[in-house]
Length: 407
Image (cartoon, rainbow, N blue to C red; front, side, top):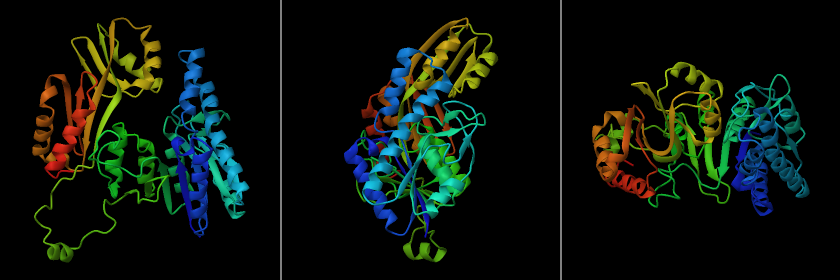
């Protein structure tokens, strides 16, 4: 009997109708002789609503209390799902992060998992229970509730899967896998059967909302296969694993298939448009090192960084704006904060193919004057714009690459 870990996102748990769909999927997997640990997010927009309500009380709420507040959303989901499964005749128990033995450091709102004591979870599995764990949260050495950051339930699921030595970790959402672009924005986007940890890490890190970037790093570290699939259908999902292909072709297979002509063909895995970025410009700033230390201390992740002629430029996520403004209140210099777009093209070995960069630039010719930075690395080409770019350019770029068979 294998142990498997399932994770369900907020959209999958948004109301009682969806809870019943989730319960049915859990039961189907349970009846295949699996031991089940299920990690849940907060229902629907619960976390967003809690943040909004807290910010009506304080522009920058106390971080410890925010973690205590935000952790309640997952507790509601876990308890409701356990109530439903028990009513349907299947033994289930809900556990909070601390009851499940998830210990973290004390970096509120972005804490890291230090250790998981699986004793309680294993005891409940041996009793035949479906174990439902609140995602996104744990407890620190001072017994304070901590949270892992937005999307952190994915990381909870992978960490638990590694700790209990599960066979697989399934991440269920309202999308049935990883696509070449967001299918809600790009009509011709298609689903990938599999993708490497490295490429998935780039995709998540560039702002795609498929998986939490830290969960991919954790999966690679412990070689834990992730299957990203849809709660609402039985379509095959996307496997994120060590190899992009579960079966590598032998030299004999290659010879028989005459598959030598494109041995180094670069396949672009995904194009991501990220509008949740702010570019910050501070003119007349001389204490840049001290400012960067303050940003880091306050868990503000810095993106593109440049300092020239006493002008500091850097990018951050929109979610960190309030914390940034609180820090900048005490800083001298003229500050400008502006919303921008970054489009990133991810694919292993992409930097070795200048024709891809050429095609990207050709596709973006119409808005070339909006480009303020291009970054090329082994697995990624990123283009940063000085404003929010219309989704039509994402479609045009995707379709151009698709036509040339790079996707």
